[in-house]
Image (tube, rainbow, N blue to C red; front, side, top):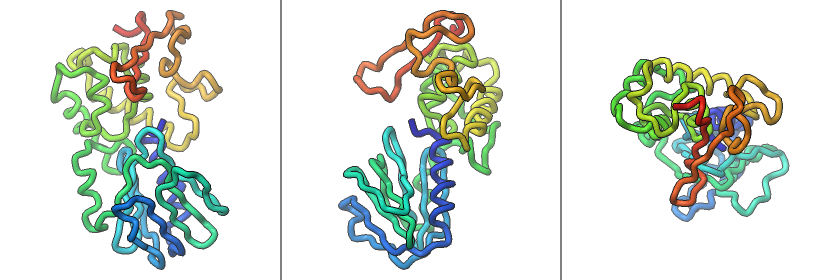
Length: 254
């Protein structure tokens, strides 16, 4: 599931593949931007902000968001997939955006206005734990899960990290923010968790990188809690989506 660490790694891969190279092909398969052609322009920067990605090319900035299923794929042979929304080619290198939840071309001078609403970027140079903690505490009666998933609080947390953090702090996802005794510690631990996974292709929150041992509760409904052995429970959202599944240990989390 794409979260802040996934986007961070994606930006790094695109940076290595494209920055400093001149585009020899630009094919945007979104009607609103289908006529945009950045061929012959040089890719200058690739930035990540929370779950958002910006590729700065000439006067433009290509802004994308992976949402639930999106990805960028880099290949020397091109990418064959009916869900490709954009193809950027620089010589022998092809980068394709697949099933992107958001894809738009912005004026480079104002591209970051699109993410001005975000809280501190957990993996950014401007990370501010004090501000993140203050944002977290603004609405003390809000469920913890809702606050963690709100990108205006701090940018980069998705549903996997949300569930894992609730377990680590011994709180149900539905518990209110006021039950957190130290919001600054929560913000700091959140940053540490994403930072330690920023270069891993298979994230771990337990510290154990062996397959099947990486997570505390997420995706482990019916399995024994790694701490106490109690079966992990799961709540399915009423709208039928998988975006906000909750997992918790009824013994370790109160």
